[in-house]
Length: 234
View 1 (cartoon, rainbow, N blue to C red):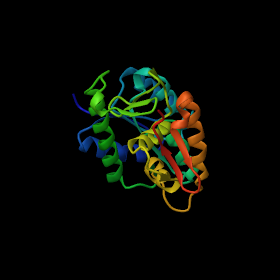
View 2: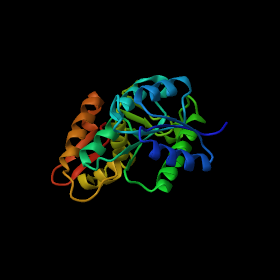
View 3: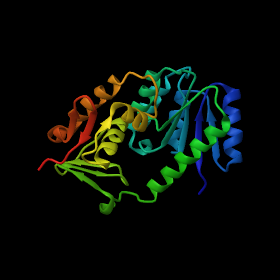
């Protein structure tokens, strides 16, 4: 079965350019111009990837992404967000609502094709293991068990739902227990951002992560003056 993409973009010239190049790369592409049409099209036939414009005439791309993630059938679809907004906070919000990747307009169409291809490959690998968990790859830190294959997280044996950014942050920290990650490292590796950026963003999300972890909150330790680390608690 071929790889499928739905483009939700109200600028026709932009949509046609992406459609032509994705089709040339072997994708089956559907183009719609509104959020309502996009959600209906995804509901009718869930694609591998949704290329989603942030500024749509009837609803923001943020709200579309939230609905995709809240619907079980489309919760795991790849989402590449397109926007003319370059503010860091806009990028953070896009990732926080569940976007997998983010491309700023104007963009090089080759970059979009490469990013969509990478997302489609990731989704294909995930679907190749439907409902399975590879215990050999599970990471255990204290009461936390994280499975990077299925993306399941269990706290004291109970499955826990994390937001996409919370999951990425937790996965990085528990991947190397005991290692201290600076706020700048976390911004670069989790958010894909570097440079002169307010690192308080990291503190806010660590606080949210600790709330989500509940009884395992103490596994994420603040190292004052440096950053954060995961630690085993016996």
